[in-house]
Length: 264
Image (cartoon, rainbow, N blue to C red; front, top):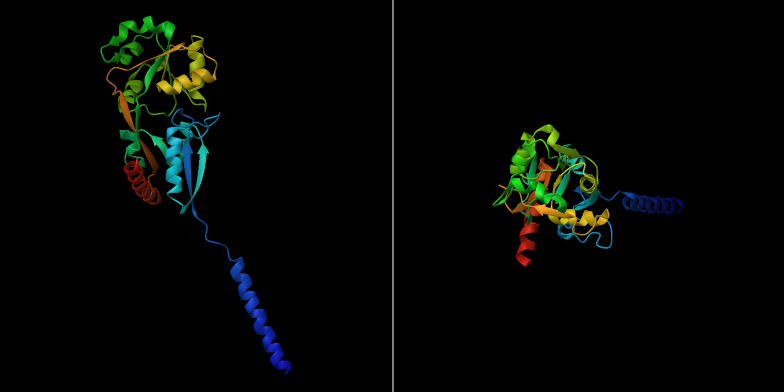
């Protein structure tokens, strides 16, 4: 009888142990996907009453909801850090990139996600006459303006402005451009422009208006000049690390974009 009780007790303990180990076994974790984001209003808005309500913010929210198999981590980084992480081999994506010849060799791209206005030359309204000699029917001749040696334009370091403008900047005299690496690069460059340290800033018209108000520039202090030879609009894409895992994510993103566009 005692032996039977012992066997029963052992069986019970074994069952409890198996149940305990089963409950304690770790649940298989989801693969982590890093989203690299910058504050580029009105596309992305990091702070203030409209935080998270930018066009790209809302699109990214839909993409994340459509990919529940991943653990999504959104990181706010500057452009230089974003490009670095995208090329380090981890599973990382940028929801808002121009497609350029150079980047296409390094990253894997989605289908176009949206169309936006192209970058323009942001100047002080009081300097408009200064750029009058460089005005052409389709915009300001930035190549000629930079070649003269009297005009310096601020640019965001590592930001692509599209193949045409990227080539123009690369070929311009070194002293004619001022790259800025900070997280608030556009705001800082607009401050420099306001006090006369530079004569122009390359950027998006609405982005410049947002930052001008944020840093306290008077309304109407800035003007935006289209740039000769640059299309008035451009397409944005989502892009991921050019790895097998990154390409799988892009395939899934393309399906989600197709569904979103069909419903829109």
